[in-house]
Image: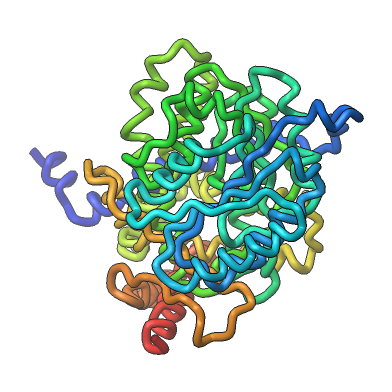
Length: 482
């Protein structure tokens, strides 16, 4: 009876909840460390095309656009400047725009025609299926056996096709993905933090998954598909907001092989403001949960080896970490008075897995891409703070992803080189600056920790405080400006 009452005491419930959230995050931390252990960053020789250009495959370069007046011209120009025989590729602009973007597309295509590039647009008057629907419509008219996709904010390098296509010499290779670069990485601390987060995915996760023969995904852009693979996997489907992730897993379940080419870099713009970043991350998180709900049962029932299944499980459920971090954010300040009870080795191990694994993960990726020690010292804490500060809005995205309704595809506004009056505004989701409330909560936690003399927990509390305060302040400032 007394034991039952003790279990129901608020302090005990808080302590157990805190330890439970920390344990769940520690599992993902252990997974991150396992990736680091297997990570190798080398310079393997790239395959090359044959000398006879007549043997080179015909490629359709698809450019899906929706109201992209600030970046459409530079994308089309870069696609048309590909160092590939003009009779062996076409540029296909999939334009769903409702603004002046369509006029820009027409003007740029006329320029490509004068240069001898095969280029045309397919304009839809409705957005059925959003990006997936546009890609599917384009497939019906595409001439190429290979289909290359670039989003609006990318600037493909001239040698992209020449370096990527040789990987298709193996007839079972269905997709080749390049690494994303970051055009505006050093513009602000926000863009540096975003770039660091993306590098962790592209440098370490993709590399290890590819090298170990595990499933990994096409990232929606800067990749080339074998047309046969798309058809064999069931085509582009729009019952999730991440059609790229969905098709990737369906194609690999059908037996197709994917290749990752990390030394081929396609530069792109990361969102320069917090609202655009939140919009992008909301769609990615919601879509990944939708794909997990749709395909995880099929993956786990498949005949693929256990390591493939476990990595797919870790990948597709990765965004569950956001609600767990949010729960930890609520419970951590409340558990300050209980910290003395957590002095055991198990608590220390979980704490290290949750924090040091993240630091090592991003340190290793930034070192691989050549960032200096001073840059890493600034960017890694910023990336960690940004990830924590985003857990409020991302938790909402995760729970939305559990619903049956796929939702609306909201494109991420791109800035390009456009002046301020012609830029697009990001859609507003949730209460702007709600993160400030969590920052205040952690300010109280910091005071409480000082009062209890728990100096070891202060850096962890400060990281949470900075993350929530930073994201909340940026959100409020942008909302007031709009």
